[in-house]
Length: 151
Image (cartoon, rainbow, N blue to C red; front, side):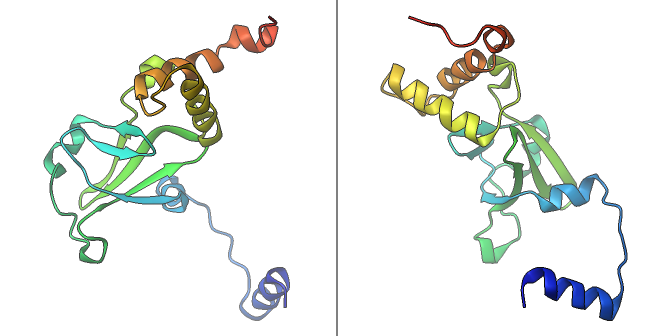
């Protein structure tokens, strides 16, 4: 049976109950990375996320012994400007620390492209501030209207 055929047979057998998802449900559906909360915040893919709300959990064990005490961090592939950290008291939203330099939201593929451009311009494609400046140039609305520079 294909997955669609299996789903159809299960709906016939058990019925269909449409559910409306709330905001927290959407967070649950995002990809997960298990990370430590350090003094500087959380690092994922050469990006640092931080907020003062992480203070009580910095350098603390999450309680997930199977995950070596790391914290459950959810992130969106189409908006890497923030991550969502699950704590015992609920979710904490932590923004990317260099978001003001980038001046625009960005996706995983945009980040990857900006890192490639940063690597072409210099030796360090892990420098977040440099990548943020590249993201700012790539996302420039004026550039989108006029197209790439010819030269």
